[in-house]
Image 1: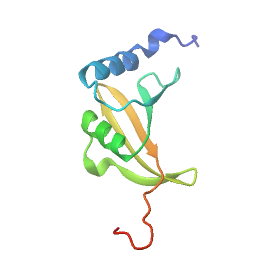
Image 2: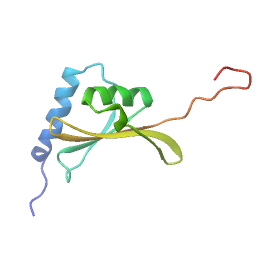
Image 3: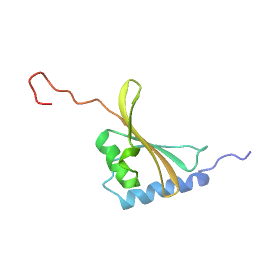
Image 4: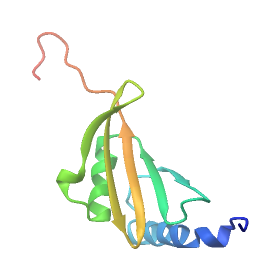
Length: 104
């Protein structure tokens, strides 16, 4: 078995660079690219609005977004394939709360 190289990751890196140029307004993300899954990227975002922006940019259907829990915190997650790359997108967040007497 050969040693993985950066060149093997070039499809996902090229895709991310292209996406950054085409959608400079897209919220920044914590991106994880693996040497073992060279056509996949994990995209961690700051909150629900960022998840929605990425969903639209990647052309995923609204019903692709799933509400779940990660580490005891609510999360929004979706998986999409765009430009030949599998994107696993998610964000954990703290839900908004209302104080007694405030409108919900």
